[in-house]
Length: 563
Image 1 (tube, one colour):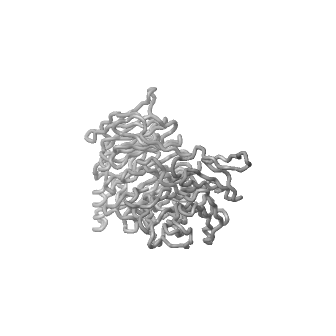
Image 2 (image 1 turned 30 degrees about the vertical axis):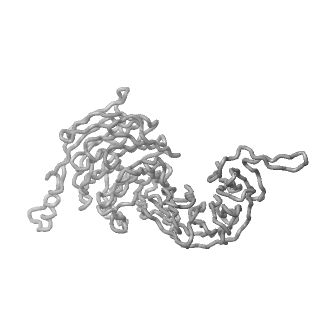
Image 3 (image 1 turned 180 degrees about the horizontal axis):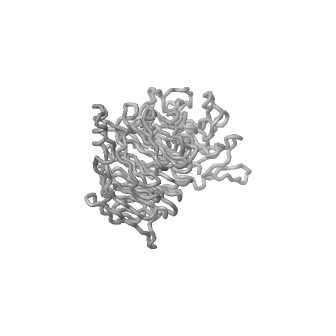
C-alpha cells in the first residue's frame, strides 16, 4: 500500500485471491475522487485472458529451450526414441523456421550474446553450434562421452564448458575454422561459390583447453547434472545429482578451473542452475521441491529459498534479476519476486512436467512483443511435447476509475474471483467496477452518511457473495447483493460509530469494530448476534440484563480480521 497523500481519508486495499489470478498483488492509491489501481508488474488473468501467446507442437517430449539474444527467435530441443530434433521458431508468429535431426535427446541449450552461436549438447556427447541468424550449423562434433550432462557457452561465445556425470568438467575454446565443410566443385556457378565462401567464414572448431575431474567429499566422481557460465565469463556454476551446488573460478585466457565454493542445502538431485544478470547470484532447482538463490562470491548457505509442492526441474532469473521463474512436475510456471521473497504469480496448463524455461531477453528500447521486442514473455517446454510462450504484460500505472465526483474515495475491495472492484465514498455512495478495465457496472445508494469501509464476501456465486459496508456516522453495517445492487440486510451496533469490518473465510460471519473499542460478530445466515467482544452481559438484582465493559480496546477498532 503506497504512502497516503496529504489529507487523504481512511484507505483500504483488498488483494485478489491467489487461486484465480495470474497476479496476486495489487496496489491501491486512493486520492481525491479517483481510484488508481496499479498492478504489481503483472495483471489479473481474468482481464488478461489466456496468457499463453503460442503453443508450439514439437513432436516429442521437449527437454530444453533458449531464446536468441534479440528475443525474436526461439529454439527447442526435443527427442523421442533413439533420436532428437533441434527446431528454431519465430518467437512471435510461432512459424517453424527450420529443424535438424540429432543422434539423441538434446540435454541442454545456451546462447552467447552473439546470436550467431547457439550451443546444443546431445546425450551421446555430440555438440552442435548453430547460427541463430543464418540457421546454419557452424560446428557438429562428438566432444564428450554418453555420460555428458550438459554444456554452457560464455557470453562472448569464445569459451564452452561441458560437464558429465562421471565428474568431468572440460573447458573448450571456440574459434573459426575452414575445415570440415563442403567445397563447391570447380565447375560450380557463382552462387554456389558465394555460398561456399559464406559457409567457410561461419565454420567453427573446438579446441580443448583444460580437462578436469571433480570429486565429492568422499572422493567419488561428482555426478554433474547441469552447468552455467556467468556473464563475466569468470565464474562457472554447476549442479549435481547429490544436490550439491559447486562454484568454480575460470581463467578465460588459459581455461583453468579452480573450485571456489561447495553450496549445501538441497536434499535431492539439483537438475538446473543459472546466474542472474550481473553474475552476483546463482539459482538452483531440485527434486527436493525447493528452489534456492545463492551468493556466488561469498558462498555459504542459501540467501533465499522457495518451497513448492512438486519436484522442481528448471529455474531462471529474469533479465533484470528481480524475478525468478521455476518449473517442475506440477506443469505450472511459478514466478517469484526475489527481493520480497514471495510468489508473484503462477500459471500454466502443461499436461506433463516442465523440463526447462526461458525468459525472453529485453530489447534496447524496452518494448514488448507488440512493438517487436522480446521482453515480457516466458517460454516453457514440457514432456507433453509442447513449447508454450506466455505473454506477461506490464501495467506500471494501471487504470484510473473516475466516478465519485465531488467527494473522496474512502475504501475499496476486490471480489473473490478478482473480476469486480467495489469502491465507497465520503458522500455515502458505492460503485461497482468491472475489474481493471474501468467499466462502471452499477452505482449503489449506499449509506446516508460517510462510508468507512467495505468488504467482499470470499464466496463466489449467486446467493453466496455480496458486499458488506459500514458507516462511521450512522452506526450501521449493511449487506448488499452485488448482482442486482439491492440491500439484503442491515445490522446495527450499540455504538453509533462503526469503523471496520471483516468477513470470515467461509463467508458465514461478519466482524465489526467500533469507535468505542468493542467489536461484534454476526451470523450472516441466521442474521443473529453471536458475541460482543469487549462487552460482558450480566443480570442485576432486579432481573435486568446489563452490559459491562470488559477488556475492550482503549480506542477505536480501526482494523479487524479473521484468522
